[in-house]
Amino acid sequence: MDQFREIFEGDRIGSRIAEVYEAYDREKSKKLLLDFDDLLLETYQLFSSQPAIKEKYSGRFQHVLVDEFQDTNPVQLELIRSLISGSADGGSLWVCGDDWQSIYSFTGASVGNILNFEKSFEGARIFILNLNYRSTPQILTACQNLIRHNARKIDKVLKTENESGDRVMVLEASNEEGEALNLVAEISDLISRKGYSHKDIAVLYRCNFQSRTIEEVFSRMKIPYHIENGLGFYHRPEVKFLLDYLRLIINPDSDQGDEALRSVINVPNRYVSRQFSSDLEEFAQRRGVHLYEALKSMPIDVPYLRKFMKEFRNLMGPLIQDGQKLEPAEVISFLRGALDYDRYISDEDVPGPDDVKVQNVDQLQLSASRYRDIRSFLEYTDSFEEETSSDREGVSLMTIHKAKGLEFPVVFVIGLLEGICPSKKGDIEEERRICFVACSRAMKHLYLSYSLNYLGVPAKKSTFIDELLGTR
Image (cartoon, rainbow, N blue to C red; front, side, top):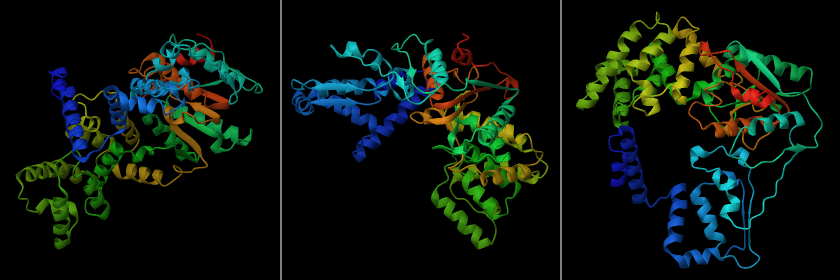
């Protein structure tokens, strides 16, 4: 691992990552474990160093079929080459994929594998399967309009024999709440006038933090929904920890306060062991008091724990004393600074504003700003969690990546703003493919939604909207 240290010399974050990777690799070796990437790399290295083993396996498979080929990475491509290199006469390699839907470069996938397929496999033939059975002509035209702006692609023209449908709709709002209310109005119309059910509808977004306003408005307006393969906003760990701090502040001498203290006593890491937690529980039980009260008088022998617990009490004491008068957004802002919380949740020395977890906490603070006291805000979040957020017959809320492979009669793509979709951090062609995947989930109705202001500041409509509509 010395080469990693040389590569990252002077780079504090990179050096730390190298150290973590080295420890991770060492633990795997001790326990004789391999992760998925190891399976690929070890197999590739085995084939490269042991020709006889490679020949054994390459001669075993006469026909090889690879699905979702656009999501393969370079090592997988080399393994495919190895498997077919010894095929007898009549053997074949078939791959199925769509370069327009290659959206997993962040996991190592390379769109170049499918774009360069004919060069990689001499004599290969391409069959364009461009007949679409899912969407209306209007939706397909929008998707085609969008992806034609990509330079790196296999050219094809999408076709369908489906009946003509409604035009693609664009919804504009003044802010995020207005955007959510637009969705409520359209969904109500789709159900009451056009005969759709809630489960026919999906709301797709680029990043998880975008669900907060939609969840809150849907809950308030009694629109049933569920988060597909994910956690509701107030259940996300970085959000829940701050809510538990608020619970401890407002009610330390209670069972709820005990539960909150258990949650936050080691957030950020104060090196609290299970033994210490057990000792605290026993001390509180013997004294007949709740955990925070016990923590104030419990003798602590370990010096570093004594130091950390004193700092914890010094932090919490004034907040608990003034808890009834404090505003929740003010407390959240204070805790983020006092705990260096953004760096803790993002694992970055200088956490960026684009970090998804930081954005979730921004959304929490924005939600809290509507309440004048902590108790009211917590009552809201507690009741919110018990309402409609897990109704499998409700509207599906999910990120675009989670939606890949799915289809819905009605799709709303929300938050189409410059900096979000497309993301400031993403490659523009990959971002365009992500948007393509979102829009192509729609069967009958496609809505594109954006707001003129976001997080209280003016926002710019995504260039993808004009591209989809063919006006750019």
